[in-house]
Image (cartoon, rainbow, N blue to C red; front, side, top):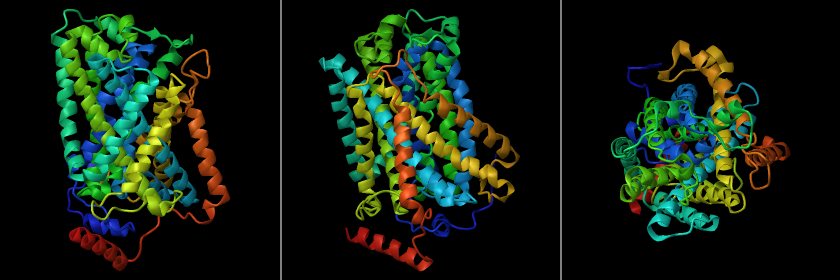
Length: 512
């Protein structure tokens, strides 16, 4: 890849005007802050540990030690392909805007379906993060105060977490930006503390052979390769949400360079740090079966306690809970920006309402609460389906990665007609893009397959149902109505009209 060293020919605002939009959001994010949002949403302390139970049943240690770097390398290729496109189109619409500009035929349809899959994935990843956080908070409250860990009580904690994230994003705009930066160091230092404690304090560690070759199959399926592939969900789900760097471009300085870098670096840093974390936790397992059946419902919490004692275990658990809170907060931020941009172009029911900007805080308040409520609804099946969390994570992966790869496919179809931005892959663009497309096609099918046997209402993977509902809704709406009026991303007006929108926001904000 190459990054142009010459100065950009136009400012961020001028480039946004060229793309057809006014500067409605405040552009105060540094490149580091842009990276921090994606790194925080990937959140190795969230994804790795909330799906650790799934991994212990679906492949065991070999899924953690071998599956993680395998998926990480493939995801890096997907991220590189996306980053090149982000550099050309640095706007909050992100993926669906890219599809509209890259499709040479039926551009509105490509844009429409990309946007709806992105919306599904964004809501699902927010649900997965905060739902996983609810499990860990419940485990901490259970250990400290005897708080019940039954589904109804977990859902109650889930609701409180989502409400807190909605409030923070509505009223604590500057605090959210600060917490995003802090979150990077919380994750990196947290991983160092957790791995260091688990490496030094326990008297017993598992062998290298156990960590890198031990295979566990508690799924009910008889095919080891199939079970190992299912176990890759742990890594694939964790490596999601990095499109946040694209959705935050209208709030980022020098976005055509810093946002692509944010996408790629968030994946690479997570790949290394996440592998270290998974190895540290897996080496520290004291009693596999006992920790798998922990009364907390969260095996990593039991591993911490068994390895270094109750007090130390609670401290490590608190570090994880803090990281998960940061992660969910950033996910609501990115999700709301995607909803804001999609509704700005009229693609959601009641778009004018969801696109509305709070002129005092300069944030899309209504979109923030749609993101939070949508995520809460997606988590409710846990009340009657024990495997609902794995299904939510599958939905997040399928929705997001379909939206990730559609513009990559369209960019490949453009070939040499694609106008590169200042951040480009050069001659490596084609092979990287082709491999990325093949990988996403594979995992899209994989994670819609059954995850537990026998298949019952309580173990059914409802990811295909959620995907089908979105396809039927978005596809039906498209055929019946939207194809007649949705023309893809709308421009907001002439240069003079865009300037007038910006002046109005500045005047109202100053008066407030």
